Amino acid sequence: MATVKTRFGSLEHYEKGGVEVINDDPHNYAFSNIFEVASKAEPWEKVAVAKNIKYVLEAIRAEGTSPWYAAAHDESAIVMDGEIEIRLVKPDTPIVAESHEGTTMLEGSPKGRTMGRIIARHGHMALLPKGAAYQFHAVRPGVILLQTVKGDLTIERWKDICQK
Image 1 (cartoon, rainbow, N blue to C red):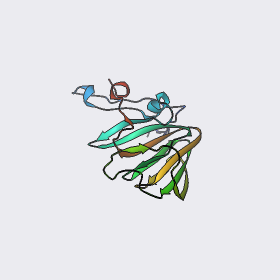
Image 2: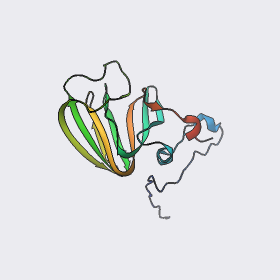
Image 3: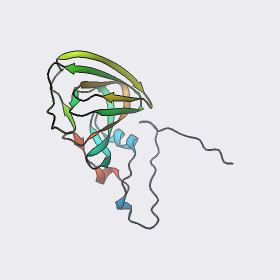
Image 4: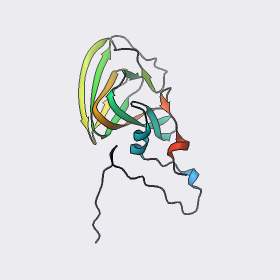
């Protein structure tokens, strides 16, 4: 039996795969590599790499300290490469309208009670609670896969990132 070796990708080392289409048009398939997308993104850009109705997975290049964000719905962040510190604050007053979809970038630091911080590494997943303000920090470049709702900050580059 052949030995199969699992290789995890990273921002510095990845191989782009593909979809082998047998009897269809490749344009009917979305295929992107999150590490390739993050390598071409600016720090903290939220580039959609998967979509299901209004829900998206966004590849984020984590580098340095992000702005503060909040959402009117839960989000989850999976660290795909690197080590990311996530700082959480419970705002004194609501900072995102209940009806707003997607992530909101805050102006400055939120006023409120510190909820804590999470140190997440490759494969770790963190819940970003509804209404909480959060900020990411990465000492060295990394990659976050964020599950959220498509919003104003979501960048769609399907033409550039999908298999042709």
